Image (cartoon, rainbow, N blue to C red; front, side):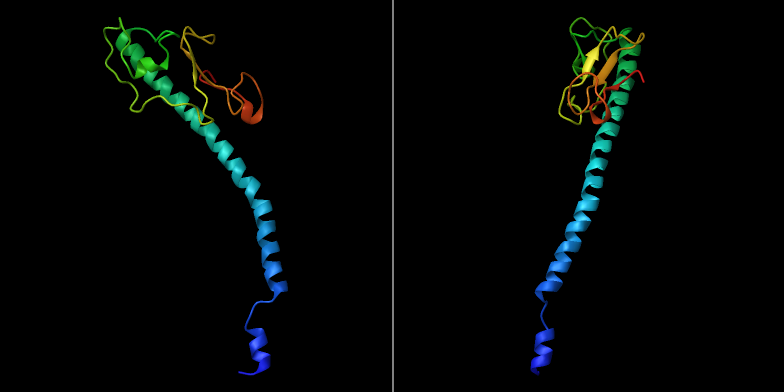
Length: 141
C-alpha cells in the first residue's frame, strides 16, 4: 500500500462535519412535524375515549333507567353505585384513566347541553376554554 492510498482510506474532518450538518438540518426540519403529530394523536385519543364513555353511559342508561349523578361520576361505569338495582356492569373493560394529558375527565349530569351527560377533557392546559391544543374536547359536539 502506498502513501497515496493510505490517506484516502479514512474519513476527513470536513466529510464528517458535512454529515453532522446534514443530520442536524434533517432533525430541525422533521422533528417539529413529528412532535405536532403526537399532539394531534392526543386529541384523537381524547375524542375516542369520550365516545367510549358515551357508549358505556348509554348502556348504563338502558339498564338502570338513568345516568349516573355528577357525584357518582364515570366511576359508576366500573363499580356499582349504592342504591342502583339494575346495574349490569361493569360497562367499561378497563379502569378509568385520565385524558391523554394526564388530567381527569370532567363528568356532569344533568349536563348543560341536552338530556345526556356532559363529558369533557380540558385539553393540554387542563383549564376550561382555550384554543388549538388547549381547546376543550367535549361530548356534545
